Length: 378
Image (cartoon, rainbow, N blue to C red; front, side, top):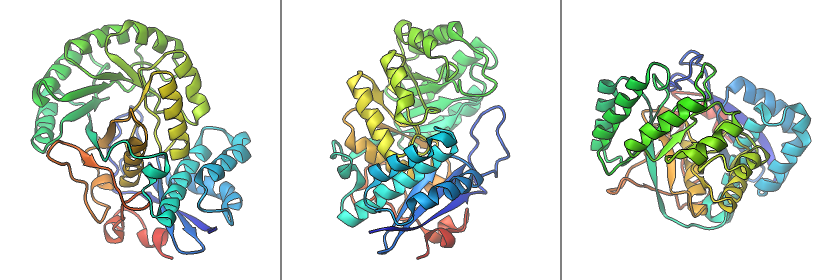
């Protein structure tokens, strides 16, 4: 089965706020779907966390390497793409685009073999996984209401991030965290994301250590991106000194970028993003390396329904990946599939068990945000 065509379609009109200081206009495209069409009919879909214009530019470079390639060999084909294009900017836009292509090829392989992608990645350690509701921070009274409503809907794990945290005062930071803990209850998982990859981030190691101690008092499960994403040595020191778990890695791409962080003992939890890191092929290899270093992989996923499905399959195939990120209130996650995502009575999501990624995009619903027909039609 050969690759016949690759198409891209950006999602627009309902892009959720990302929270960073220099964020683009709300309708700017930061999520792009990629479809790989084969000569025998199956179509695989992937997701890329970058703009449609950049993905289309990358596909102009990648298309000659892809057309006519075997569509059921995702890991080999993706590695070929990485190696053939390293000199064009390893780790940037081209790598992001390969992420979506790789995901789509795993989807094709699953459809052809009649197996869910998680089984093809190595086996299913679990049939369901706990999603954590991911939302931006706000002032305590506003955030409390949002969290309480999510808890009432059955969510049992939450991550709050960015917003005013670390940007106003230590007193406000603690009020926000205390209010969040009160809203979700003592038994819920609560995580805090400082958003240290923000271009305007100004806090350093000593702030991070003081804040980590505060978070530990409120039983926060992990402290995400407390420092600039290039501050490897400070991360390693912080991880040794802090009692709360330290997480990060969402801006890194390809497995080679993660090795120094794992070897330095800089993270308790590593968070590659399947839509940027190089796809499921890379994410799985990072998970194996993390396991060898005693580090958990919990995927970053400010995402789409397609990216979420990929994360669920990875969670089925790695023994320590027992949580996935779920950006709440995004139509690109909630409103584009034929079957909506549903929490069970324990606040868990079932991992799809049908062939491929196991989700069916609803062309009519997807059409509200992109040209779904152009993406998916034979």
